[in-house]
Image (cartoon, rainbow, N blue to C red; front, side):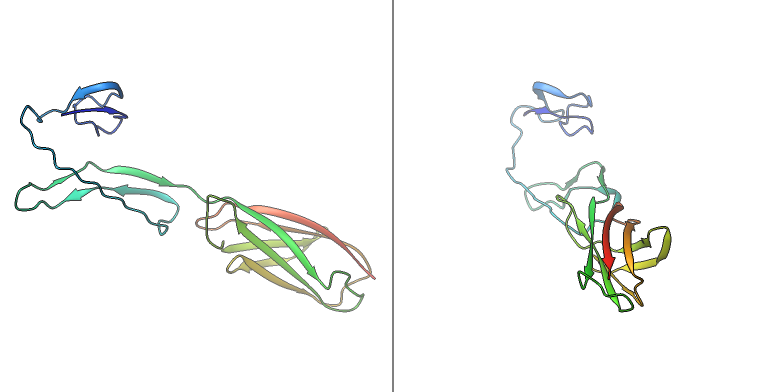
Length: 173
């Protein structure tokens, strides 16, 4: 039996740990060794960010002994995000309530709805730190003052998400 390719974790079975561009003999698989064709695919979207130990195991059957692979360290990175700000009504009236919604979205290949906290400022004035749930945080600006408002939202990231920020300006009349 011969194999070639990446061998950093000893997956070729030639006891070298060296990548091979040409076929090499697999140790312990001499002439007459029976090959058992098979393939297994594992897929999940449920792994949080971090390093995970993965091992493949075959329990064996009546004709074939069981075996297990060595541990493979698989790293799941935090997903990138984008932030944007929406204000309703689009042209708030002085003295009225304006609703600010901060939307945090996953950037492909990441999937899901980010969570965590977002800090919102109006110019230099911190309006607060708000909880992001299902990719959104909502803020009510009560008694909006006349003039230009420079809103900045800074998403601080979460257990599985990188941070991002957005800016927008509106004028209350």
